[in-house]
Length: 380
Image (tube, rainbow, N blue to C red; front, side, top):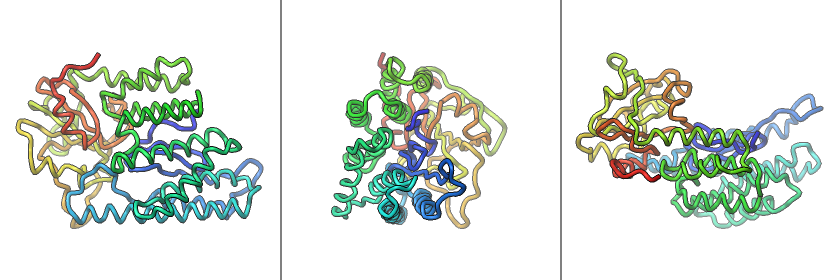
């Protein structure tokens, strides 16, 4: 199994072990395992405390970068969330450092060193250059120390390089700019060679970048003699999704009001289908205020919640969004829609032209570009 799997449904790559990389978040995320090593009856309480601190940091709410705030209050809330999350990761890095310093021969000492490097990167804030230099130095030292396992060094190297891309793209995920992302992975490929986690990172890019660039990366994986077969299989599935572009698209839908229907019956001259997690975001998909304020004529919106709609917080108004038809897919990620589209993240946008053909797909912030691309000639 690859150490770096495909992006999780939140949008972030999940590296299970002591830590992980990841995307609906703006930066890598940690998934810490407190399972006892072989031969030990229970988890060391000190290590368990480090793990718990990292898990708390991971679970802190944060508004994804790229989602435009509807109000100044929401923008301020997003900044506060990111700052609080960074401080919690700093505490995680410090705790991990103390653990491996006091217990250099402990079974989890190596995990603690990697966790210190990754959590330290997550603790960087724009206005603290001193901490930034310190965190980058720790992570770089881990990356270049060949005593550390290559898979762990790659994980840290990916986090360092991904952070560099986020700086150049105003905090967007590393895969949001396909040119910079592929250049980054090419550097890591040269540094680490034909490792499964390298090819899994290419797969993450193919899954999460725009529909014009993703197929190129997927083709590269599928045609490589060195990529692991499971990764090549996943790449071929992605190419199947791209094959839907330019073809009529239809699937059954269940509106919250009215009878069961299909996408073809709901589609208008131009149709925007927005799939989102209504269980976690019952107020509606974020980032649509500008489309409500400046509606596009002859455009129909279809909102599809993968999973039952959650109860909206008491007293909170629904998020601003253009009028449209709201549907629910109770099966969530097991629904035919998710399977047909090979979904790996939410929110997810589909744009259909006047003939109900799929014109393109991508993220919420890419809707203007997707609309502008309707009718363009598809590249071979």
